[in-house]
Image 1 (cartoon, rainbow, N blue to C red):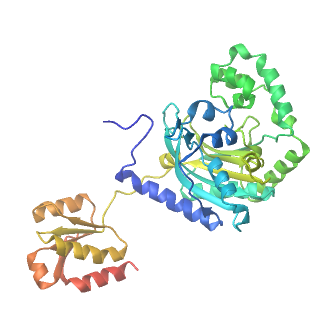
Image 2 (cartoon, rainbow, N blue to C red; image 1 turned 180 degrees about the horizontal axis):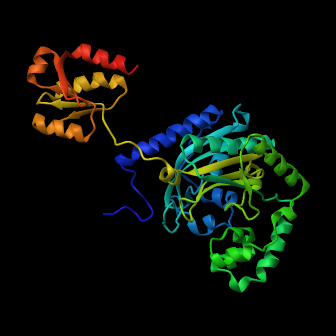
Image 3 (cartoon, rainbow, N blue to C red; image 1 turned 135 degrees about the horizontal axis):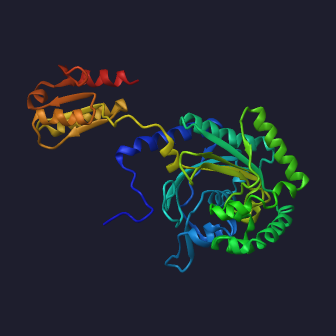
Length: 410
């Protein structure tokens, strides 16, 4: 029996990186006032069709959608924003004083698996509601950048663009259709389909021919309204004031229909074609579109698997206390209960092994101390503690030993 294609086990030797990623992300986001929210993995299909956009690749080709036993169409979430917006509306979070949220969790898309792209993947994301000020757009980029800096991920560039709003984008879409229609025969099959329903997505196509054609396409910056232009210019001013370097990319669009005005991507050249490690933007119409009151929104999402691949290697896994039990399992377990108060790693050996073989196993586990317990130690109320760094050992009263070790890690 093998794991499903596009899915991956996260094994104990990899988990330290994941824990470090999640710890640093939580610390960073909470330090800026973001509160964690956890939404269901399974939602009504209509949520994503209406929110993400029926003409997007995600909705048309990539969602895990099926009928539940009640005959309702449900979907494994392909992204985090729509579910967070639904929770915002359902739970009347507009009355909650905090307007900034973050989430960490799995997403699902039926894509062709490749490096940096799985069918089950994980995202760290943030969403901000009800703040129109362009300063919050800059904050979102700043928070994203600080998180990546704290993960020691370097060699990144930030690309931004103004993609307009429902007032000014229709004319741009019309002009794009006219332009790409004249090159229709050279477009890939996906872009031929996008041409009628979502021509902006052609700008993001990775096909070499489509990309070359898109280079000469009309630019959105020539069509945006004064309101979008003013907002975007203020975001740029704010980013510059914060010392955040960026590049303007007029071809940058996001693969979701809900984005408006300001969008951005943080990109690396170290992952090949799947080089976007974080991306987001403003979505000022999505809350109302999903049935809520008119409420602005902005956020970003980072792909955890891609971040993990860019993070420094972790040190070899280790354990602080390896308890070598010589047929005194309950005594060993009681000592482990006491040592658990240290908050450090404790491993009790229950397999019947010789002391020599247990010391070898402790060495392979990079144990800092080996606590040897047998019938003699139990009867005397002591333990023999071996320091694996210098191979010295001494006998200690068990209660004093545990007391001293708890004090050590305070």
